[in-house]
Length: 311
Image (cartoon, rainbow, N blue to C red; front, side, top):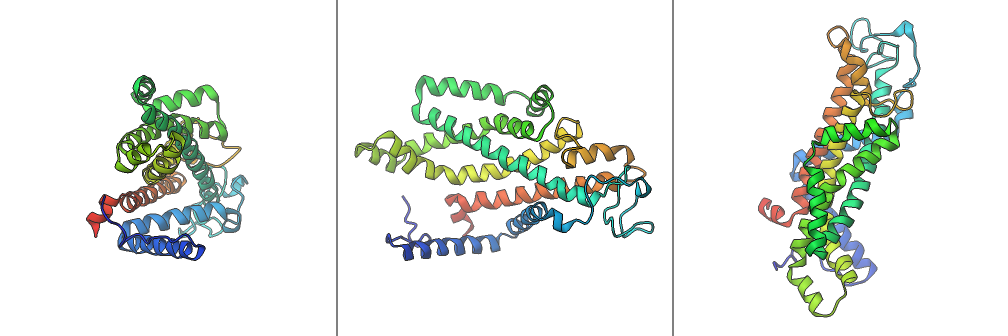
């Protein structure tokens, strides 16, 4: 194995040395991020979306559900007939588009975050069992995973959403369960690779039992690939949730404003009142772009081979 002592500080066991090691690693990743401008842009976009979703009540002055037909179809504030009390304009019912876009970020992030957590947890367990056990159990599990992955993903999700009904919890569970095979397949491949490595063979020869091998040697080496995959899959879930909302199969509009529902409501006004669909569409685009740029950076920084090639 290559000697990485020059790039990763060694710990001596004391709390002070542990804190110093963490700070050194954090500073190293910060320098790597600063050199990767696309990763920096992705991180900034992601933080903006998270901040907007977290502090939505303080950012917006209008309720996302309040209707005022006298202000319906009002253009954005910078246009001639616009009003800066509605900076992005209003929809056909007089609802403020700016507040709906901001509050819509909450739904997208909740679906992406909790969907990825469910998918990663299920995929980690299933993939680790298949990769470490091997044999017939591995063949049976992978046959089921390959069968699920062979189905058209969007059609599969739409079918399940139509059966289960419209709610935020159902959408999260749908994406978490249907995305788990992707994490299981990646986990299984990494486990097969790590299982044949020298340090795992040494631990096995020394008499280490399988729980210690899995939790001390295999799972820590899965964190990097799974974090990178989770970033890309979170971006995909945000995109697919907007697709379900556009089809009317996501969260009901009277419960939460979502970008997909806003696109569906504004599509009929694209030629006359384009701002109704343009701003939620731009929110989806920039959020997905930021997550993908951040995922590219994480893939580079967490993969030692790519990291060495960029030095």
